[in-house]
Image (cartoon, rainbow, N blue to C red; front, side, top):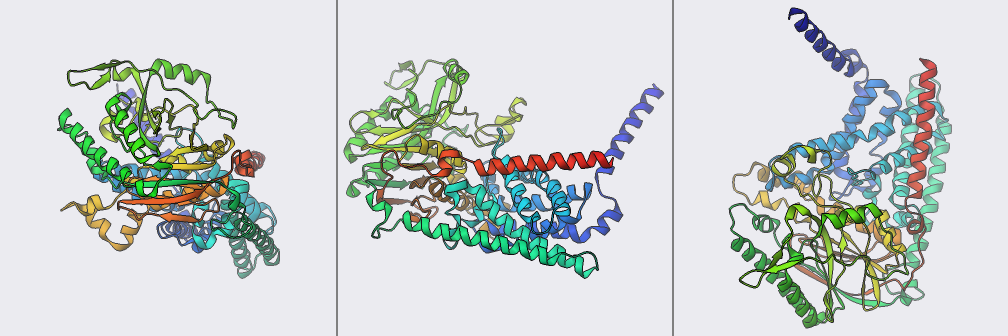
Length: 633
């Protein structure tokens, strides 16, 4: 027994020593304290460069301290330097997620975890970047560092944990930088991230060489300035390209504009401004089925009233937000389907809206085995007919499913209603789900953790994209988080979409829920001016994604958000119409849409080719770095 206890104590001692060895020594902290402070300084800039503050100019120098620190730090010191930068960079820019405390008290812990998880991606950049800055000439190193940064960002697009939010490119989605970001139609947001990273890397290289000169070491300032000249030349070309492209795709009707030859479609966008607290309370455990149905009916009346109000604008298409009808059993509600058909005839317009969809798991698994289906421009508007659902009427004539819920796959979906034929027998199921929001990767295997602690949904991902049609015009839909993924917009463009719709529900991210809650500590915190700006940033950051989707595909984007920010974006990224956040609003526009079978941009045709190339370069540098490390050891 004594030997067993001694063995366990020895194992524990080794574990403690292993953990201690991962931390820098006191001497290492003292020696590298300036570099660590530089990492923290760069990380704090993450609060300012993204919307809502949108200090886009600051983004061009925000990474300089971090890059300088990466050049000097080694080993475990670099590891901790990355987290001293990465955690505040992401945590502060994603602070607005703390508004979800109105629904779940565990959210603040989740945001801290998210900050660390996202900060981990910078490890893929920091080690090869430090290697490159020490090995390559100072005129070349900044260009390779910018490639490495872009490759690291591209990694965030993969797996069930994909979260390509607040890439460096997103700092530039402001009107004063519109000419710069026009180059997204060639290489997507990755190309813009490359440019901003390049500007930071060139300045960092100059600082490094000036520090070397000040300490009497070998300095190559002139070579570093050569790199600056090269970067300026690249940015000059990019802005000239942007001016030319904005002239071709201007959202204003000027002579000789390419868009003057584009057909028009009358579109109305509705922002119903239904509180998420009201939606959340509809499914409170304390509510009876009748109370839940009464809340749902009240919200439906609000939506119907708003749609009727569009008649004066005589739209051909009315766009409503994601989950505008909140019942998980929408597909079975034939009475609502009939009412929507009547509303569509009354207004004389097609209706596009979000509501849940369901399908027997057996059918879903069959489709899953066939793989993801890609649409082409020759395909019909419908990509998948709805699965036939067996319904049964109760004593009040209401229908309900005969299938048990556990045998059904649930989807967040987009639906269309036409005046002539009512609810269409096809649907778009959301392809890219929100990690830890609509799905819970890994932790969904822990009993009760997902539904009791995280309180997140369990949706299935769609297996194909859908192109809808209104008055002969084809358009594709992206639901909420999907608008962060440029390759989804590119897929719709290749399928022949003439414009894009984004339907979303950003009502979750409203600080007023806590501010208006008497005695709420979070409410008091959200009232502080600077912190209020951080807590209200979510909808503004989400809107910036649609600006890039428009430029990448050169297709207009129509965006409907429940509480905002709804908008109509031209193919040049100009926001033509925008509704204020947290207000009821309607936007009406005779939208110029792309002609049938529009020509594809380079990005629409080849997707993330540039970011993929940067990722390949990152892999090559890592191989050389590992080879050199083995030689030294």
